[in-house]
Image (cartoon, rainbow, N blue to C red):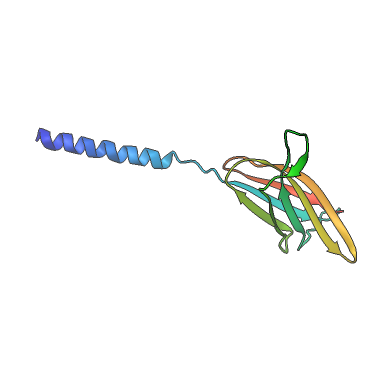
Length: 123
C-alpha cells in the first residue's frame, strides 16, 4: 500500500503543478481600438488610420520606426490593431471627403493585456 500512496501523491503533485502553470499564463497582447469621428462626433467610415512610432537616433535625427500598422475604419468608424508588446504610437487618420481632406492626429499608449480605446476627431 505505501508504494501506491507515494505514486498517487506524486501524480497529484504533477497535476497541480501543470494546473498552476497553465493558470498563471497572463494575456500579453496589446490592442489599440481606434474610433474615427468628425468634429460633431459622427462616425467616419473608410478613414485611413496609421499607427507609427517616431524614433530619434544618436545623431538626433527623427525617423519613423519599422513597426507600423494601418487600415481603414469600418462603417462604425472603428478599427483595431493587435501588438505583441506595449508601446506608444502616434496616430494619423485621413479621409478624402467631398474634394477635401479631413485629418486627425493623436497618441495611444498600449498596455500589456489590455484594450486601449482612443477617439480621433478628423477636421
